[in-house]
Image 1: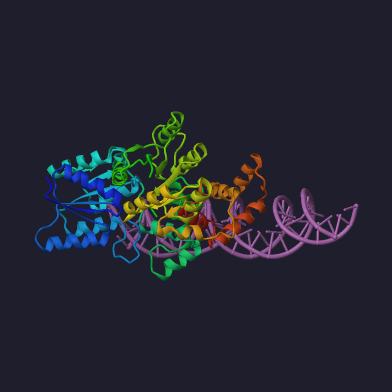
Image 2: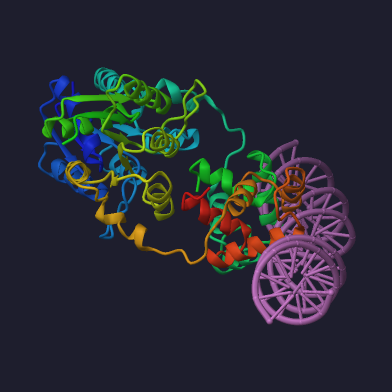
Length: 222
Length: 222
DNA sequence: CAGTATTTTACGGAAATCCATAATCAGAAA
DNA sequence: TTTCTGATTATGGATTTCCGTAAAATACTG
């Protein structure tokens, strides 16, 4: 079982629930952080003191802080922690149920577990901790387990996401092309951007650009 | 102080926090529901048994249920409860920080308090309960208090929202006009819809329709 | 190197939208 | 009734997006 655990979660009411889980599992040594960068600093300090954490339990969405913080989202935190301490176990604990984002957490940050905050998430969190502490298996809440099986035949790349983000920020296609040209982004012709958009609309079954942006916003891609 | 309280909140981990608050305030008689319609039925039953609730603490967003439910969101719940039992006190307890939606809760459902889930929301919830139980004042978390002061000089009406919703669902302007004509919605000419859109873009400082839908989605209007 | 495939770019017409102006209509006031 | 006012509708042209086709550039293969 894990000896030393850190929790990154900003909602105080939610923190109580997680701490209850750890107490039930007889894990005494845990800290929690309400801010992403604070959590990161604690993890780094623990490594330097030769007493690294075994487990990070992290929320994904944090209230945007008044002070400007280096790490704003749980996704970033998890990513950076994985780079800093490759052997730490990570559980994401979130209401996020968009398969695209969950899959990306497993693939990119190589998290070990994903627990969906929900009606019985406390029990699920316990189960996740048990499984992950005793084996190298991953855990994922049953409601979203299908996310990992979906195979995206078509891969959405960085440029696609850039285009979508610009569109949702009110940039016209022509302006996007200008920006791409001036910042040396590879395919920057009118037709290239148009073709990408058309592929995206096809992929997401969107009737038009407005619809496309609406869908991808809902999915949490942008 | 309140004698009988009901909580509508689906996340089990969050429930623990709220219950802690009630215990701290020596409120013994409370129930919680994980589903909106369940909460509504309990409130109605309590009235029929002549033991109505004094206070409803409700979340706003609920996981969409597998079973189809009559009441899907906290907004609806709060609205219906207010109609059913006008004298009940209602506190909304949510991460929602969009001023438009908060204002609408106070104006339409006449909630008595709004507590923003956050770093210190447990203390705020206590304070809210204290204030509301002893007076007819309203309570609103300081971070979002400004929501009530903003005066929208321009009022967005139902038709505006219908248009925005259709747009974000991929309906073209022409199709919207068709739909409006066939369902007898008052201004249903091409130019009327265009004019409304242009006003909306002006109001929300949107560069184009994609931007407009993106902004209004972010604001929680659609 | 020649030949083939894939990607990127170019072009052009159709469709949709954007936007300003003018005509029409309905209700209120004179 | 007439006149005024504001709201709705109509019209037309500029701009943007949409979408297919084709040329050009690049990569890949034997």
